Amino acid sequence: MVSSTLFVVSPHFDDAAFGCGAALATHPRSIVCTVFAGAPTMPLSTSWDRRAGFLHSDAALRARQREDDHALDMLDAQPRRLPFLDSQYGASPSCDAVARALDDAWKSCGRPTVLAPLGLYHSDHTLASDACCALFVQDAMPDVILYEDALYRRMRHVAEERREALARRGLRLELATAGPLLDAQRNARAATRKWRSVRAYRSQLRALDDAHPNDLVEPERYWRLSFDGKAGRLRRTRR
Image: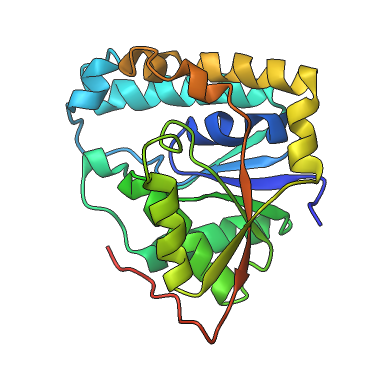
């Protein structure tokens, strides 16, 4: 059963709105927990931030947080931000560290239904997904639904290979075909609010050269998790 509010795990500032904005629009006061929202000790200049129009990481993060605040306000969602660094800024944290931080944040928000990324293509997405899956396997986070990561979900074989990798760890995924998350797809007002929130992330769309707008209006897809302990054990990857 999906709770009236959601706890959406967003690897980066834009991923929750891109991947499950319609669901957020129909579950007011939900929480969006951005995992990789920390700032490097010293400003860095990366190719991605320059494509987005920024000279260094401090300017990029200030602008991206403003964009996120605006987008989440349109979705009536509440931000929570963890201090881990985006992989473009340095070494990634361990899966255990991310899992502990997510567990603490989720509990402090009243333990609502968790929407986590399937974990496609990008190492930060995979790490955030693995942390949630580890908590699910440990029964620390008993109700986890995976959303397909927008922008990456249409890349050839990427989603299929990720599902197969999770299956090898004993995690079974069942595509959701009914329920409130899918009902949001048929809500015209929710679709409009999602699209407006997507357009709030102007710097990221600029870095993408607006190359993926069609993907962002595609229906959201959700997978329910179950764990077959006899099929294997989830190995928590340390990074």
